[in-house]
Image 1 (cartoon, rainbow, N blue to C red):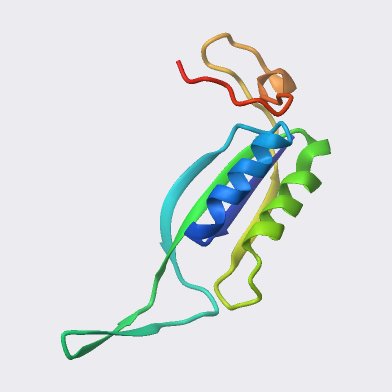
Image 2 (image 1 turned 180 degrees about the vertical axis):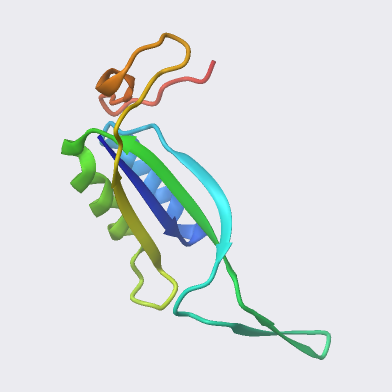
Length: 123
């Protein structure tokens, strides 16, 4: 199993989510984060005052997937988040040693949710 963590621009999220859902990978978590990288500070002007913003808003996407799905997830994120500009984000892929579903006690790859391109209703 692998955990993919991606820091992306907000506008890239919905196309990524939609394509992953269509490709049978519906399970992911997102967090709103702020960070800095090569883009450094951005000077903004507000009511005549200049302000340097050193951290930029991003979304962090996390998903734990089967090893065989890693390339699909990474390619999808790259496809929808690469603009060629500084600040596009980063992707990290790390191994997952163990996964346990709390409700049932299932372990390992049985915990992962892969589906055939249909949205799972909430509830």
